[in-house]
Length: 83
Image (cartoon, rainbow, N blue to C red):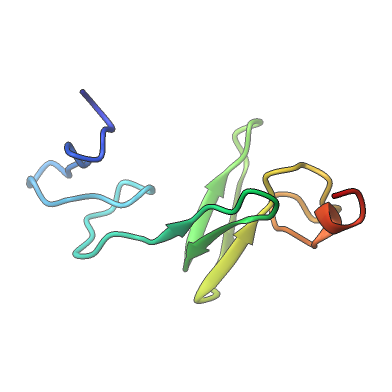
């Protein structure tokens, strides 16, 4: 099955790819929280629904999963206000 954890995406050379499609030697770590943001090891590029791309070169980013953030897709801890 495509995109399953047992079948990583591959570049034309056969090397594993990261989310941007670039060959990568190591997997990115993504940490999911029940009542909080998704933490992703950076740097990252995030493609939004409208096709625009935002990027961050930080070593770790927090992606908003509740859509309350004023800085979406980056988490600004707005989820704490109404948790």
